Length: 252
Image (cartoon, rainbow, N blue to C red; front, top):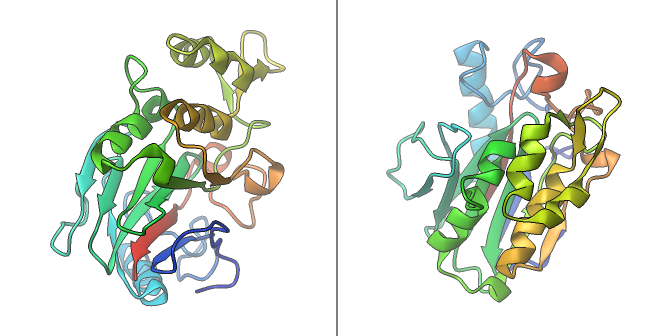
């Protein structure tokens, strides 16, 4: 794997492998340079295909790319799952199949259990994270995993950081509706009526509420911010026309 890619530092079993790509190591040209893995953003399809082949060869597994819709749908993957299956989270118990989430500001979450019996991934923008009635993509995936919270561990990948994620009051209200404690994840922005949202902190709050306390990776520091690290990460909010990173987890 490319030395610039992010490999989670967490106590996952040896049979569990995971990685999050950066924008380096691929074939695409500007503004998608260079390892764009999204086939829906206007890049040359041949370049995207070559980039996906680079990823598959590097991880020695089959990455399954979803059609992500900022929802909370979950799909169970196997060797025959079609590319482009609509969902925002996925899980598998089959070796050699990589749960894959594409991001360019949203938060990717990778899950496994202490026994290495299952792996899963979720795509969490604010809509998918907030969900409806306090049930978002994290809660839906947790229910589908059928693993005790105490046995799960989660890694949070890069996303738009709390210094860059300016939102309106409706976003703050969506999280506070079922959890008043979510107010601590918002701070006033420079623009009147706007707020700066801490997406990783909101995800950690949801995970804690489920009893999942083994959480690693993105803690909201500048290192993880997609917007403020243009040489390393794609960012839709920063560039509007942007490639996509991929966070993958699989059983070897």
